[in-house]
Length: 193
Ligand code: HEC
Image (cartoon, rainbow, N blue to C red; front, side, top):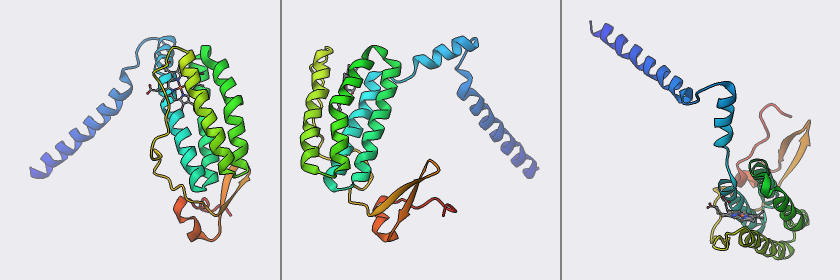
């Protein structure tokens, strides 16, 4: 009797779980076109994109300052990628976003490649003027980026003595010695060399 009741409870839990999983996508209604439109409408607009953009910009600064140039380079690449989302969902802003990228992010990338913090800081501050200039000229003079006192990322900004090679398109991390890179919590993928 007791065992039976237990089985019934377990079965109803499973059904609730299954029901929950079904309900998770049940909100998407209508024809295929209508569903597509609903999905398109909830893609991130510029405000949401900018939150990540500014986070990447901030983290890039602290990574460069700490001497983790690999992380600074990564943050810049990710900033460019989230910018592309903004260019796609807000095509009206695409030209000025691209212009900003060329005028400010390309020079920043050069200073990262050169691992030159002094030049980086100059290019970074120039970039801030570019960010806030675009806000002002688009009717948002009250949106002013200022460098936060600490990065947003839990990642270490200490220099990482590891070499990253690309093999067959995927990054392959060569950690030498392993402990020197413990900060970055990265390991070569298992079974990959
Ligand atoms: C092409 C113009 C343009 C550039 C360049 C630009 N922004 Fe923005 N940003 C905007 C606009 C427009 C908004 C207002 C959001 C909206 O339209 O929904 C915004 C909003 C923001 C916000 C507020 C987001 C929120 O809602 O909390 C932040 C933070 C921000 N930008 C940071 C930056 C940083 C940092 C840079 C430079 C690295 C930058 N932006 C470059 C146009 C730009």
